[in-house]
Length: 225
Image 1 (cartoon, rainbow, N blue to C red):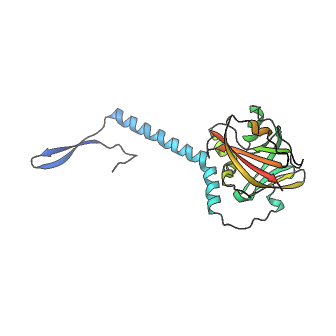
Image 2: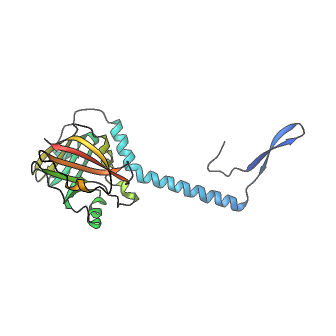
Image 3: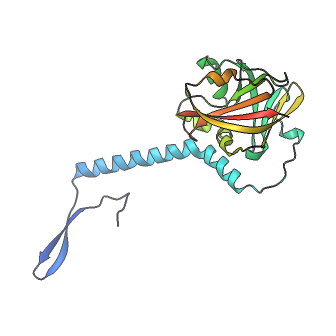
C-alpha cells in the first residue's frame, strides 16, 4: 500500500529458482530530500486551503444542519441601525457601508477587506420608491485569494429561492424584500449597477461565483414589499 509520508523503495519481481520474490533498492539521499521537500510543500498547501475555506465550510455546514423553523426577526439581530442587511434563510447579516464606488478599487477594497458589504453609489438608497434599485455587493474580482475568508455567509446567496425574504435596516426604517430572480453574469457586465424597473423598488445583491472563486458574479433580485 502506498504510504504518502514515507519513501517507498523501488521494487521489482525476480525469479529465484522456482519461486518469485521482490527485490528492493533504497532511494538515494538526493531522492529522499526531494521526496520530503515535495511532501512538505503539498501538506502546507493543503493546510493553507483549509485555512482559506474554513469560514465558508463552517457557513455551509451550519446552513445544511440548521433545523427548518419559522424565523422571528428581533432587534438584536440587526447589526447596525444606520444601514444593515439581514437574510434569515442563510443566517447572513452585515453592516452596509453606503455610497461606495464600484469603479474605485481602493475605495471598495477598503470596505470589503474589513468583512463588510458595500452599497454601490451608482444605485439608490432604500425606501425611495418605485423605479429605484439598491445595489449591495459583498465580493469583487479584484480581491486576493484571502477574499474567501471575507463575508463567507454571502457565498450562500445561491441558496435563496423565489419568495425568500431579505431585510434592510436604513436610517431607523425597516424594509422587507422578496426574492424573485437570480442570474449568473460575467464580471465585465456592469449594466446591473444602474438597473431599474419602473413599477418596482428593487434590491440587488452581488457575490462571486462559483462559490469560493471570483470568476463570475451571482446576482439576487428582490422586490420591496
